[in-house]
Image 1 (spheres, rainbow, N blue to C red):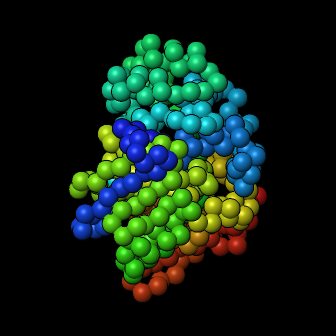
Image 2 (cartoon, helix red, strand yellow):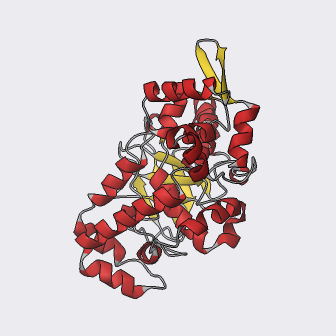
Length: 333
């Protein structure tokens, strides 16, 4: 995910410091970033030993990547250090879909893309030079390759990742409501400290500034685990933190082979069935999968008629869950 941008403050080396005005805590918001997780997964591909709990995902997706040239993505998303910020724009809404975020990448001004690419230090300087020489074409290539990579390696697994991130946000939102910023940041990450009127993040570079009414965006991540990263001006202040329970992401079994399941029951129904690893309402599934509630309801009706899901009313909500037959079908796939 994104790294740093903006000016440094030499007098305070090795820390990011956001200064909160009295009403800035009210402007803290959470958001998910499918494109941020996708970009972070590029590092997982290249350094699986550091992210061993993602090995089930790696084994599932590597055979699919033979026809995709990821060299330019790897060049601009090196294993260590700065990654181009334009690849992971700060989410503008709590639950942006991948297509929306990808369109923002495509709209990156060429001069900004070239400026950020020139800051990258990696193992493929020729690829970086090619990008900088024609950033307009470079951004288009970069976005096209990201889209192909998403479809091949991530789209069908996103509901499971989203479920983990959603659970973390719900828990932390309750902590913020109950105990304010001090309670929220108490166990966010060992490099993050709340000091009464400011949030301090230990980093290898420095920046200090008031939030200035922009608010702070908190983005949970599983594929950047265990790191914490930030974005500062000219972007909206953003803190990307490792999700709680990242090691449990694939413990319910390795990622299924959604292609085979999709061939059997249809792509969208396969995605819904996979997303029901944990019980969910129609509206929750619609948000996760970027579908309309009406479309999800129709597919759930078909899955229920086929004995793959069951429904139960809890108060004013109807919650769906997989049946043992549905579980067996997903695991077999």
